[in-house]
Length: 322
Image (cartoon, one colour):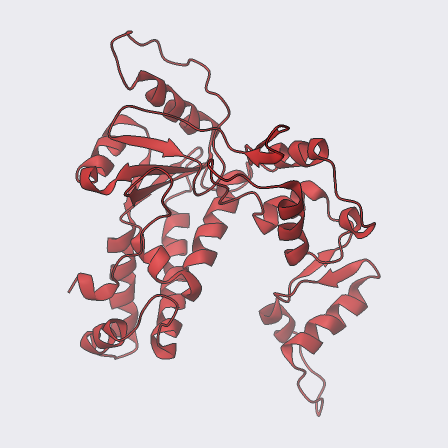
């Protein structure tokens, strides 16, 4: 938003405004119902609850073992859009209203009256890999779409993944770290998805950017080795943000065919560079996959974990692929 506002010609001799003041001025000029977020984004106060949930991604990251209360959901939305009309009367939307809005925003969270929380479906499998809602929303209870033999121990899970291909949206797939080898190839071979080695793609674009800037790759490796997740050196962070945008552009080029389902694996760099564009990269892709009018139609993310409730692990950065 700030970039677009800065592109507007400024009268000669007019002192440049600070970003915060510039956005405040734009909101005041635009309309009496326009406000700005803490992230300096403009929004309308009459934004629907469905759109507010979708844009804020308030329903993402809900773990089956914890769930989320209505109050916590409202707080997530309010943190992004402080002055929404639907939240301004001081009354919290009922669980029924919230559940309907979550479903419309393509977050499959159902309210458990006994627990007093919204919970995603918990899918089970006896196989080496399974799908989970530990990163974001999951599919509703799957309908049978493929006839299977009773002795197939993974038939139910295959049906659910086949349904995910049809429906689109975002899906996190977890696999025990000890069984990670070969899993991406197996999934890509069995389902009509476009596999993307995200680590290799990120490093390819990173090297290209370094060459374009006339920098030394060894300098990048030293900066990365001296950094840690959440404490990335400023110069390296600047490069990383540009690389994430290039990777996003590459994936957009892979999603021009209708009903494309991208399957990202070796994606640990998202976690390592979470605050340096990784989060924005993932959230933007998630949001696009949840919108029927945008590509990709679907997005799958392979997450190695030690257990079904563990958060995705952080991995080393560019120094791991010299």
